Image (cartoon, rainbow, N blue to C red; front, side, top):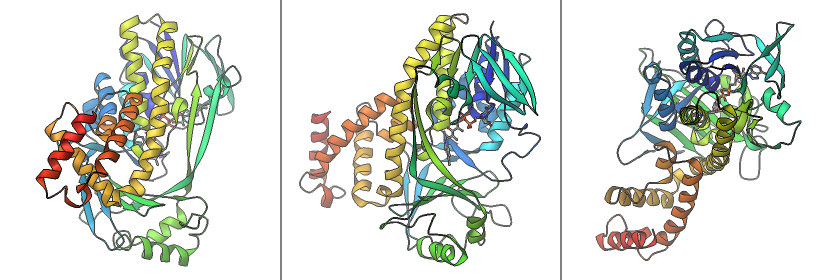
Length: 450
Ligand SMILES: Cc1cc2nc3c(=O)[nH]c(=O)nc-3n(C[C@H](O)[C@H](O)[C@H](O)COP(=O)(O)OP(=O)(O)OC[C@H]3O[C@@H](n4cnc5c(N)ncnc54)[C@H](O)[C@@H]3O)c2cc1C
């Protein structure tokens, strides 16, 4: 049994606490913010995210799958809205598989409750980590102006994209990269009907793709949706930006021109846009993820990514599951081996999901409205249906499987090359949907190239 300090009691820190406490370790979690079960640290905002296959695999292994399932809404398809209000529904998989929308605050509260039920977990709120002694696994914390020092056998930094634990690691031999993407985001709440029913299909992820920017909407349990507008920080020749869409008149015009079907759903959309904060999106890559077998990073502290695959938290949950598996394999007192293997195994996957997430942004804001892309999707679906063991589309590999992200990324690039050749074949673009001869030729070509 080891004494474990976890810095950060957010989405990943709270799950890691459950995993480690169930193994018998004494776990102390130090969280900078007040207890979210007593104070509304999310300031009334309805921020939500999706849990997908990897997240569920980890939640199940930690014994909290049912506790979380109860607060989710299944989402089976993307539904795109064009400027004229036409809708196009594209299922996420040929077998109607779902991703699951959940409120960030509700999920965090649930996991903290589950962690607190375990007698060997202690939660400390309003404790900000200031520094970590990497040799001795000792943390210096600030608690309402008082200095607190905590010694442990192992420290986990689950303190998010701007991790204090990582900051100390950076003073040693450490590789670090931080990249802000050009797009920022702003959230807008879509209300439910007065009787609590949703105004749009809650089982779809709604997307208003506008090539260089996009709005998306994800259902909440209360019948409302959280809308997120992703748009460049600075306007360009092709696209408006947050710096130009400013002031009541400009914002009203922007929504009327770009998202005419949104204003009837969200009558105060202009007021919300003007009131709600604008946030940036950062990608963080670093190496190594552990030092001395005593201090390790998990979740966004190790791999902050852009949110376009909805995998940041899911990847963090997979970190926890991999750690748990390695403890099963190598024993609970062999931290040196376990943390070394954890960091070596996870780092390439952290890099891969960072790349995959950027790629999915292009797909969401642009390609989902592109007929050629939609045709490719139909062809892939048909090949998968006829040869399920031989073709699993990239999206399914990422969202509905445990295939390591790095392998999925490599396989996805191979699929791109194959589908380029397929789309260049005679008759495919014009007749694939209607001509069985073209369909047979495509199938033979794909199977030959696989
Ligand atoms: C707009 C948006 C949408 C997203 N959608 C999805 C999605 O659909 N699916 C998905 O899987 N992921 C999604 N993500 C990513 C997801 O939010 C993150 O990957 C996830 O929150 C990471 O969890 P974490 O616990 O590692 O970090 P965080 O959630 O950032 O938690 C870190 C915790 O550490 C605390 N902390 C920070 N510094 C200190 C300190 N010095 N001392 C003590 N405590 C500290 C913080 O207060 C916080 O509670 C989205 C992200 C964004 C921005």
